[in-house]
Picture 1 (cartoon, rainbow over the protein chains, first blue to last red):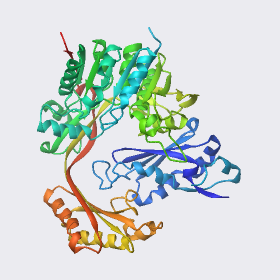
Picture 2: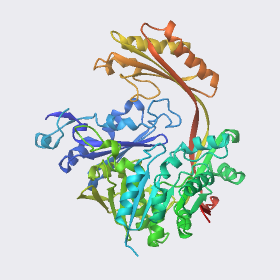
Picture 3: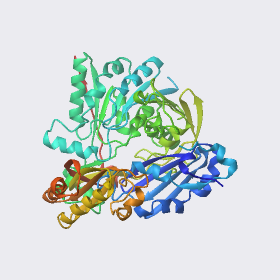
Picture 4: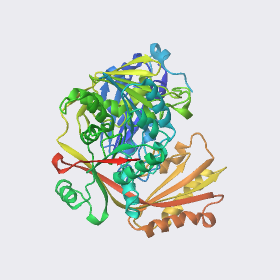
Length: 116
Length: 453
């Protein structure tokens, strides 16, 4: 099975409240949603953000929107008023999620965006 | 009475494009239906910054762009009976109302201004409530601002009194949209389903362009037409709470993807989006793309509102300083890394410090700097045009100044070939939030006449 970054399969947006980051993940095509459900799990996301030491990662599934919402606690170094990060909101981190690499069944490759 | 109302968004944050409201108002005028326009300009810390400005000058403390945002559209809105509702009063709604009154006079308009206040909890009574409800309240002398999130009710009251411009301080963002809907359709305060729908319409509007092609473009993957002149959103909301999101003329786009991104923006549990008015629920929401930049939102519902109101408390958080220096060419990364280590060794003991190499590893890493030891692994692309950034934080201003001086000293005493040093220091505002009983917060509504008598 070909492997590709999540960026070719879905889009994402990050938001913050205090030390809590949420990242929505939206499938480009409905056909891709089951694959995302299977592969983009709470543990896969926790691993991707391991260097930020999340205290909790929670996934909410919105099938009618072909979307998921990930809520990561404790990853923003205290959040916008505390962190020394250039991006205190963590807004750039939606594209960290999109770096996740997935094995994509051949039958689904046609639904992926072309490689850059 | 119309069964539909249009609500446009003129601004989604403090610092938004000031030419955006013009197209929204023109489209609302042409539609000729009942309409309102909202301006959401308060972030989590914006109010604290506004409070600091007010301390320096009691006539300030409102949204600095207020006049620039309203001047071009005030006359059209008043003449077309389009109420303007904004939290641009920030820390000083009364002074903001004075500015609106000045603009009205200049435009030869007579109008009624509604001033909503009572969110400010810094007075003695408010502080007593906070001491009761907040565990980690900082010392009184450090408090900069404390504002409760008001709901739609005081805005509805002002609309009922005939206010044409309504100036508020801290009001929950979606309440700006919900209020004119309650006013127009007479929704009951416990009609949770409709309040939930109106609230999510407000949620989709409250960040302005973020639902109509702003904060969306990813070239080749998600392209946006006319990103330099995005038409800000206009929602059509029915008496039953049905929502269609569209946009004003100009660039941008509204489709299933833009709306989904914004629907989930800053949401945690989709089944419980908490506001002072209602617990909105998008767990079962669905979207229908109607074409022509219009998307219908179905399946939104609501549940009883939370018992308590959120208060955001901002306090003096010491100082933050940032210094930067660039390195280019062979071995640039090693020189940048050495420079960071030199600054680290010479910085005042105990100061919080973080080093980044912009272009190699910065925003991805946490403040603990776990990536610093493996910088080379992140430089796989081989960038040789990099910039060291060192950030410091401390309660003691002098410690931060000493840290920044060490960045400055890299010019003559640091590694070879460093250039382009910039540094800046600013006070830090820290924030916490807590929940207080509803009856501890008393919203106030004042009506003022402006313009020729």
